[in-house]
Image 1: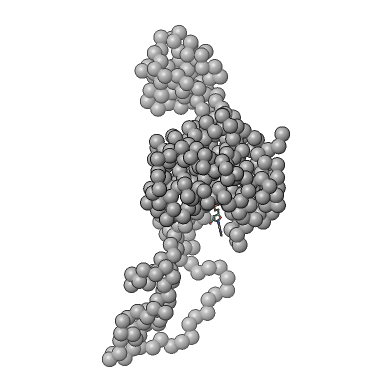
Image 2: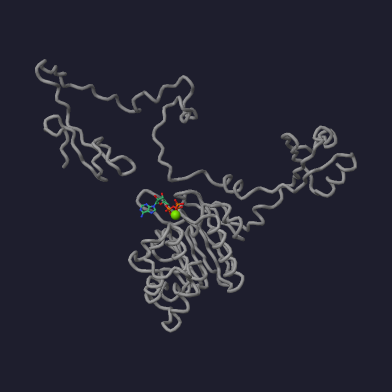
Length: 391
Ligand SMILES: Nc1ncnc2c1ncn2[C@@H]1O[C@H](COP(=O)(O)OP(=O)(O)OP(=O)(O)O)[C@@H](O)[C@H]1O
Ligand SMILES: [Mg+2]
């Protein structure tokens, strides 16, 4: 059976950043696949390579049996896609935008265009949007329009990158229902990237987890959430229960007990035999959140500043009395300055060295003059009348 998506050793490097590192995706036709990962883990880059929008540094991509990007033209009209924020002409309405998108590229028959546009808008809840220009849409409406564009050609495969971005809980539920309907009625394969665990848990049958560019987990949701071999019991008689359970008790917090037991029904009967009242009893299963957090390390897009050792960050590498934080780096000793220090004349205020202001990590100017520029190269100089010389 031809896979809907298959990648082998898929890798993308941007300079020193290894955005995607040897990913092997396997998405069978008819599946609903959730591609999960923290911020910056490589989801969008992978999606872009699946659609031929970014060329891999190494590895191969096959979509609906065709190699991408080589045979992209022959197969991509059967694929509906939404990558990050959907793009549209702001001064045009939804119908005009969809019409332009449908006319671009193969696969969109002109005689069925109007009916397909109406159906797609109906499916995403924008049927009554009229001629209102897209620039007047809310974030949620833009997202719905992006999904409508993906549905326009009645695709065999939907590749959606964070499809419910900006939607409220009801909107998320509507889109989830729509995707489930498409999958069950038309057999549409759905590949959905997200960092919303609840969304994936409610929708997907198979899950791939990516962490810092590597696929660390790929399995069915049922297997990932299989019973752990323990049973969670709530009882108003926890003290009695603890006595009866003896060595089978794994954890206790208040009236909640976690008990090692292969058969919940047998455990239930055992507790009832001893006259212990039970208010709740269920097999213990790991949540998807627990599975994902165990498999991943954290957001790879964190840009934390240096933290002094007192805040504990470097305590793993420094012993308690180690003051390496303040020591010079290892290597030959730094030469001492040879210039004699000059003392400013009492009549002349000391003239500071001109210092060039650098943009900070957010890209905003850090010159302090609130210049509003993104790439300000202000020079602090006491010799100018305005105090700041902007180059
Ligand atoms: N065009 C680019 N040039 C340089 N680096 C890039 C480029 N695109 C992505 N990256 C880097 O690749 C890594 C993965 O980015 P990507 O956008 O694929 O992550 P993501 O999992 O989609 O994150 P998010 O959940 O925030 O959308 C990041 O470190 C990012 O900075
Ligand atoms: Mg992304």
